Image (cartoon, rainbow, N blue to C red; front, side, top):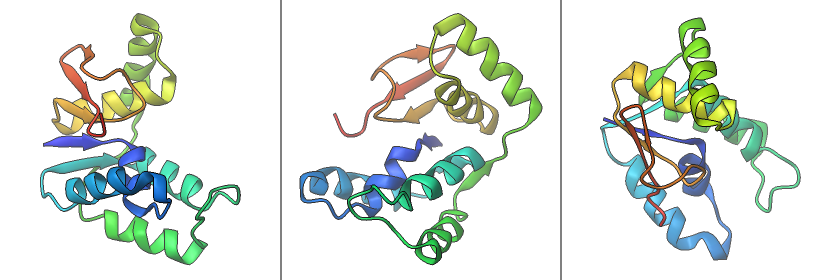
Length: 135
């Protein structure tokens, strides 16, 4: 199982002409059955997808419907142990807390790969490898 960061979900809904290739990759990834996400990813998706400054913002209803559709994936809740592990990972690697929470949610749900454009491609974070599917 592989863990999808928020940017994968956002590219999947993009209608921006410069993101056509990334949108196709993201949609292909989300067609798979071995993808996991977290409640954090769902929250970030909703906020970013409905952001008024976005080129192609979704309405509340559209974004909420997609959050429900994404519930078909394995979903890891963000728990206190994940928060604590994220803080420890941040201390060791100096990443943003939010990226560390993605990594620790992936670890907790049993993934060894995080699909993300936002972290360093190929980086190993205590056994969790970051892969940029858009590189």
